[in-house]
Length: 450
Image 1 (tube, rainbow, N blue to C red):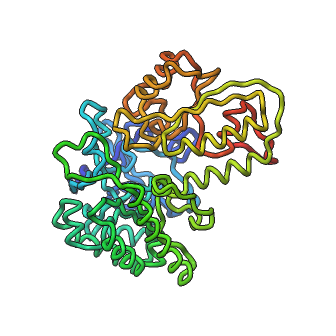
Image 2 (cartoon, one colour):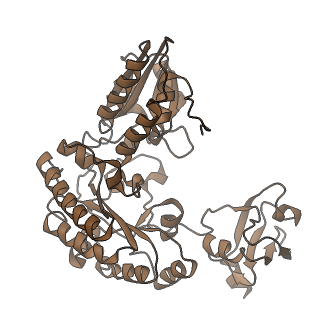
Image 3 (cartoon, rainbow, N blue to C red):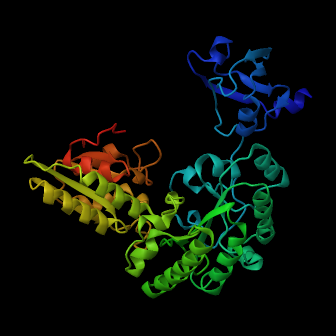
């Protein structure tokens, strides 16, 4: 039994001051072995077991001594423990070799973490990552149902089992789709994703996938369709082609037709097109109501519409003045027209404010990549070094690693500012944040600005 426990020991990284754990003498470096006599597999077991009002922890101190700690607390009260591994387990790497995988299209020599392909249902719940289901066992499904973990985000791509095996280059990929049935029958809310590849899963295959996925309504509450991202590093990979303007128009025609059907029958639009389709097709973004509450923002579905709505709401509270300010804004080609439009409206109301907006061509990954989240520091430096930058250069927060001022190519924000000889500010994603960054003033919104 002792040997089995050692396989599931979880080293404690920190203990919150004033917490229950600190009062009981739990310290960083201790190991958690059991909760209420149960071996803890990962973070979900831990949170499930500690929700009881009476909890018994088995802790191992660094010298090997074991402490049994009996705790009485409120039902949802936390113990104040953080573990060295966020999941309290190893991350599960992807077993597929998808023909469209972006990680396979990255150049060599980047930091090691960028090459890790996760396919972990726990990250789907905690961080919104998408999973293919090929990595999930019956035990994993049982735990999702037991703890009622939702939503689970699923990379579907196609409901044709044979085609899914081909696209994921995994002979079990078609069979894995059956796990959606168990999740749906268990009442687990899901979101789906289709990465569309020209000539592969578009056209009639897309029609089939949409039709098949609708069977899972309402548990499958939304499905996004996004175009495959193609970098210039595709040597030896499946020969995928970029979508044209006419292709994009056909994709949108299909999605809009199905949206009308679903909304009339179920009161939801269900299937959604990524913003890139509208830019490529040269069509207007849908009105806000078509996004069903922005269920797939992280997939680039409705981000531009939401930005425009937030901007307009905040813009009505902007009061023009004579203060002078000169700023520059760098963004990807996808958002460039929208940022220009917003900057112009601000300068109309504040005539002494100048805002230079620069679209950054993605030389690092290739010109087909147009989102600002994949812009690198070196591309910013090379394309902005001779430009008017004003007193501050504004950069969207999605250009950086989470909570770090570092670009994908490991250029730091400080290095960028030093090279360009300009102060740099990171702008949060809302329309109000953009106005405040350009004008340098907080808006009076009648509430708290966070």
